[in-house]
Length: 261
Ligand code: ADP
Image (cartoon, rainbow, N blue to C red; front, side, top):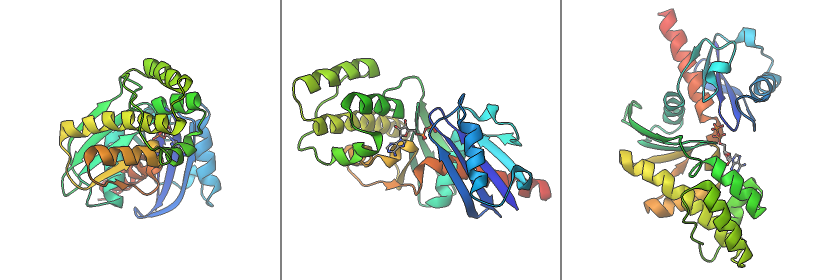
């Protein structure tokens, strides 16, 4: 039996094909999200990796900000449900999830059985999300996938104190023009994102283990800044950008099992 999970976010489109509710047989990520060619392209890509088509899928669940735009989905579920499902499957010791995506950030608390106990979300402001990092990467002229590496070159972390992305951009430009080392500003940018993510986590209560997911979890600098803020180590989910799509494929399998009972 095959199930498909599709996660259409604001910044990227992800898909996972699962066999019999356990084995990931294919996955794909396209770095553009809802309202773009991303949803169509991610399906093309995931099916090009295996000898399967949409007709072979026994159940499809769509999640993410753009989930209602997915044709062929049997059901739509929230990202909170799907991230929780995907992360608990990968790391059953998880009790706190920090998810930072393209235009939102969430903290989710789970119990020992993986049930969602509490969650909080920032989807009102770009600060503390991937969007903030995308803007800063452009201003700092450091490619996104190099931000983590540059972070660890910093001897000191600059202070990025503006709470608004637009003002923070001006603040960073001013720091650059004053000659502050680029790597210190990169680390300061990461600290700013980390402090916002941690304030979400503090609101629900930080319980171990803490697992981070979402595209921003690929930035080792943000992970480091979160660990410094929480004063403890955290676990980065394997393939952190596709945990929502994995959770959607797992939920699809559960739906099939319910229907076949
Ligand atoms: P969404 O699900 O909301 O579309 P994602 O979870 O895919 O968003 O996260 C997108 C964000 O992840 C981007 O805004 C970017 O900041 C970050 N990101 C994506 N790829 C990388 C990478 N290779 N290295 C560092 N950060 C990345």
